[in-house]
Image 1 (cartoon, one colour):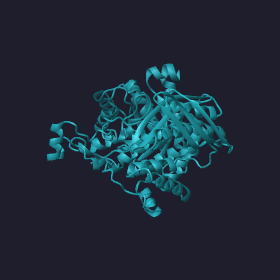
Image 2 (tube, rainbow, N blue to C red):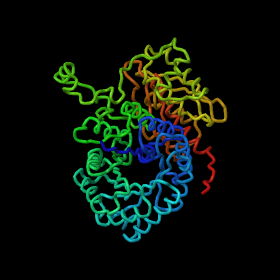
Image 3 (spheres, helix red, strand yellow):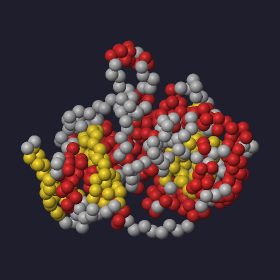
Image 4 (cartoon, rainbow, N blue to C red):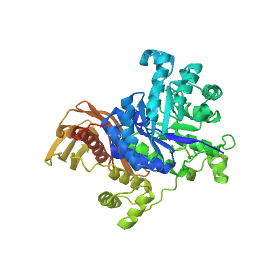
Amino acid sequence: MARVKVFDTTLRDGEQSAGVNLNRLEKLEIAKQLERFGVDVMEAGFPASSQEDFEAVKEIAETVRGCSVTGLARAHHRDIDIAWEALKGGAEPRIHIFLATSPIHMTHKLKKTPEEVVETAVEAVAYAKEKFPFVQWSAEDACRSDLDFLVHIIEKVIDAGATVINLPDTVGYTTPDEYGRMFRYVREHVPNIDQVILSAHCHDDLGMAVSNSLSAIEHGARQIEGTINGIGERAGNAALEEIGVALQIRKDRYDFQTNLVLKEIKRTSDLVSRLTGMMVPGNKAVVGRNAFAHESGIHQDGVLKEATTYEIITPSMVGIDSNRMVLGKHSGRHAFKDKAKELGFDLNESKLKEAFESFKNLTGKKKEVTDEDLFAILTDTQTEREDLAKYRMKAFQVQYGSINRPTATVLLTTPDGKEVEKANTGEGSVEAIYNTLDDLIEGDVHLMDYQLSSIGRGRDALAEVHVQLTVDGQKASGRGSAQDVLEASAHAFLNAVNRTLYQKQKVYQKVQV
């Protein structure tokens, strides 16, 4: 079987999704899970875009050893130099350089002639090759590029030292047949194409990203790019979990293998969904909550008699197991630590103590503590900044009735250690809390979006809230979970505010290149 490499861009293209704002610890946690998932290449970010992105890419490159870590760069010396400083400590440093090749991009965005574009691409690749053993070059908007020009520039960048050539469907425009034909044409007409790996990167604007990616594999691509849950710019990217399962289930058609550990799919999907705040639709293939639900009586009868009548993917294949009670109020710290490691978390002593206390608090309120509950506790604890002066909620109370205006009272500890308390009203309980918090927090705060979901099922399920807001014009996202919806709402609000505080408190050191 031919091997297809998996290039994950959740931390770069995925983070470009509207409303997504991951901090350094969250990116690192996702990176470690992607390593467990078995990706071959991990695009950790765009190092030259900001100092915080540079630091996150650098830490990921120095932490992750089981796969190659890469970063995006424009065809500029400065971008390439900064990427090298961020990535040189990685196990297998590589760079991803992009430059547009379609007439519409060259004319209106780059304002360059085709000859100038070729010259820029060749010079950038040659410069990067002096530092990086692996250089990936992407022909941005390849699907709307002239094929003969594409052949010409690809030949030149290969001669300059490129080791991977990516032909992205940047705007999600193409169809499986067209995309496959483009790969075939390139393979047949670029004389030195055997010196590189061809890669496919598809967007989902017309809902064909996964189909286009599979077509590319059939026509010569040996690296496939995408994101977890298909998140990304606009309508998103090809969903890697769908491609991985499709290659496994349809081996009769796709005689290819990957290094993906399919049992890690559910855990990876849940982590990305939780940290980005992008909920997975119930009908999402492979990881949606309805992917293995059978409502129809005919379907239920068939599955009970023989699962394969209506179920082509088993839940266990993607890591979905029964949500049994794993720990209880009598469980000790050692058992909790072992379970945390089983779920993929390696906490230091301070974090372990904090997570264990949260677990013990939950066991006093819930009859059953599930893997999903523990996953939420551990994720919140692991990704919480310890080096941040922040607002902390000490207590809150809400008075509500069908004939009374909701009133909230909140007691906060401010970043400078003072305790402040106020009360305010709202049309509903959440609005009353948010109006009160707004009064207590310095700055102009505006709520832009609010999402409520549950972790697990049942009347005692944890509530999870994701918010997007602005503080003095700066956008931030936040999340909070608790058994009480109002408490979760307050935590999410403060989490977002504290993120903006971190940005203000952070003193960046100038990147030396």
